[in-house]
Length: 303
Image (cartoon, rainbow, N blue to C red):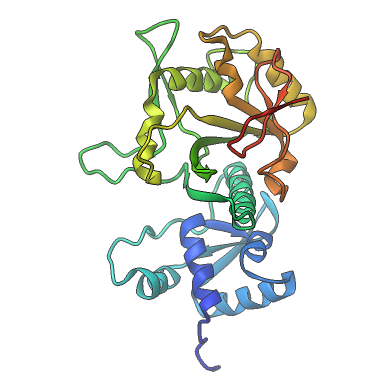
């Protein structure tokens, strides 16, 4: 039997990342913690053999996927958090049964990694935090549901409500100003033409959310004292053709004020891996809007 694995600082950081992200593909783990794929694979094998992580294959991803074991979670608690019965890990299923869910999950993680690294490389902008969809409410007085789930009143029918959970919520500071963002990853499967479901239902939620101001609850999460000056929703979709179809579909929605649709921005799938994501040119879902936007909270430029 070989000697026990001596964990390095990088190992502990990787385990902490897995606690935060839940699942990472091996290329994602490499992007975050290793200089090369070979180094990542070699170390992940050692960590797996020592019982800190486990890996598996899925149709959702050509590479192996790595997740934390209980031993790995307890190691994070001991090294970084201190002894605790609640470390945010509850013996989750090691391999999700729904590979489409996992594919979507990994796409969100790709964006989160890209955003995190872009902010780390830009000394003028800070990422205040990223809240994923799967974070649950911890209050014992509330029924179990996602922390990011909210309900708004339908603008055209006040007796009806719209419930929605974004794929992620994050906030940035730049030039002394804070900006709130919601992330939506579109896999090309949602219907575009029906206002009661799919993409347009999501758009209607955000338009009403902007009006109602419920998003201000995130001030506490990101440590903001002043009110957010609105928010932006970034929708990452599969292709330029689908992006055009989304804009066309949004043209059928009427809302007051008309400019509200310009708070919802669209990008194609390569954005989730673009190191220049902060300054990447984005378009709004309003087909009449020719302005080009960017994630950096600054004045947009006109094409």
